[in-house]
Amino acid sequence: MQVSCNQSSLAKQLAIVGRLVSSKPGLPILANVLLETEDSKLKMTATDLEIGVHTWIGTEVKAEGKITIPARTFSEFVNSLPSEQVDLNLDKQLIKVTTVNNSAQFNTLPPDDFPAVPTVEDGELLMSVDPDEMERAINRVAFAAAVDDSRPVLTGIKIEAEATGLTFIAVDGFRLSRQFVELEKAVKEKTDLLVPAKAMQELSRIIADLADESEKKKKDQVEVYTLKEKNQVIFRYKEVDLVSRLIDGKFPEYKQIIPTGYQVKAEMDTALVQNAVRIVNIFARGVIGNKAVMEFDPKKNEVKVSAALVEIGENESSFEAKVEGDPLSIGFSAKFLTDMLNSIDGETMVFEGSTATAPGVFKTKGDDGYLHIIMPMRLS
Image 1 (cartoon, rainbow, N blue to C red):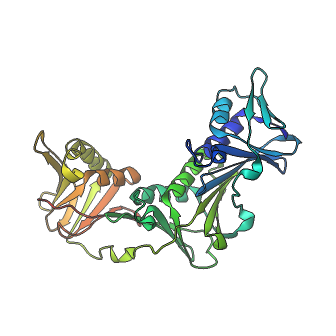
Image 2 (cartoon, rainbow, N blue to C red; image 1 turned 45 degrees about the horizontal axis):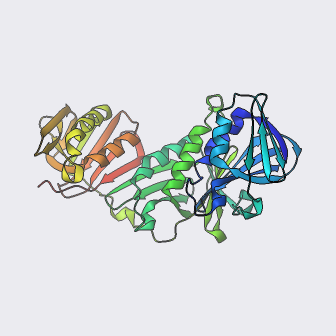
Image 3 (cartoon, rainbow, N blue to C red; image 1 turned 60 degrees about the horizontal axis):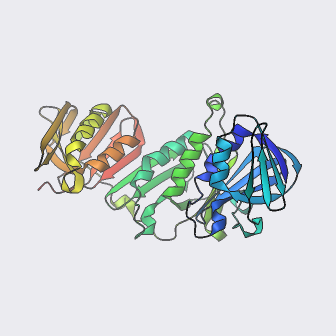
């Protein structure tokens, strides 16, 4: 193999594949990235056996070939180079990487030992999604997925595709987040996918990495391919394919969790809520359960957020809001409130609640597709 490519393009794609390379893999080959020539491009592949990625960059191919190379060291070396031409030349089991003033040699491992990672040719196109909508939906729900593997189905994001609608849902038993996305083109058939939240978060990072301000008027879509026989899914965006296994198991009947009514409703300035929760979290983080109390007062059109820590003291923040219905005091995890507030971007948010023991519902005004539910904590 003998190829020449641009340093900045190589470094950019190595940053993407490098995130899927384990620093302490069970198999030595998984610490490597697979390099191979394909259609006058350099293709790079990495996998941790659950998630895989393919990337392509334009190159001058002088000799075809493929090999695996230690990903971390290779990436660090390329990142240290100036933006100029990089030449890769494979000689037996050594690959030499050179520029005008730098050179390095890397030991390799045989490409035949590298695990096979599916490609879109193995799958069937299910749908195409606007990248901005995809990224926003992931960021609004992924944090609500469980991180404890004791219940694997809760570590995933359920994607429901039907007609021209796409719904993302994540739940960990204490909170639920849902975002609806409208598709430009209807899906062929109703399909449900349960994708690991880790894979979806990686997809969000890829979309952000490849964002190009000059392409805002005409953007590449995120294409979603299913590999039903292998129980896998592939997300293609620009020159990157992200491959992930699907989670087996039955996702909770989340619709039963969503309240159908409320006794109090409050419209609040999102920035005021964020500031109040940020301050109260100084005290709440030392409280068992990280509990913060929210009080909704329809007579004063006021919301209070407070926390008390016996050893230190207490804090209370209040702000004006449009409150209607019955007064309500309810406790929530300050961490859960912070996670939710970090994921929304609307200027006005809406709270709906019934009692101190019923789930609290949070929405963003003007976005009917977003919904976040947090289970309350005992007040005493």
